[in-house]
Image 1 (cartoon, helix red, strand yellow):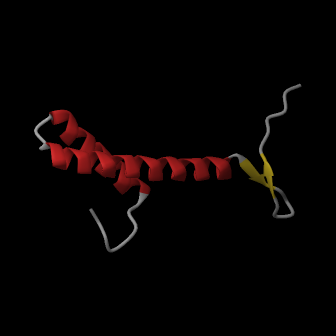
Image 2 (image 1 turned 120 degrees about the horizontal axis):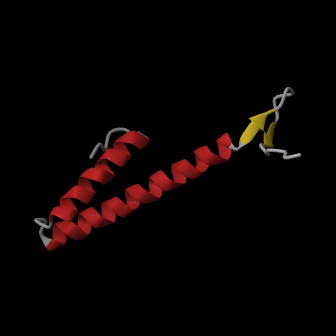
Length: 76
């Protein structure tokens, strides 16, 4: 894992997929499996938080005066 810089969302997802494959394979010693599971849960939490933040931004619309407002679809 990269310690020098913050991993990107995509790098975290890729690492999460790799850890999942290793654990599904079943050839990981118990101590290592626990460490990998813990790391995977941390990565999943970080990714989920990032998605929530992005979702909040996407659900807002920039008004002409530069203010953000909740985006709502108005049905007639």
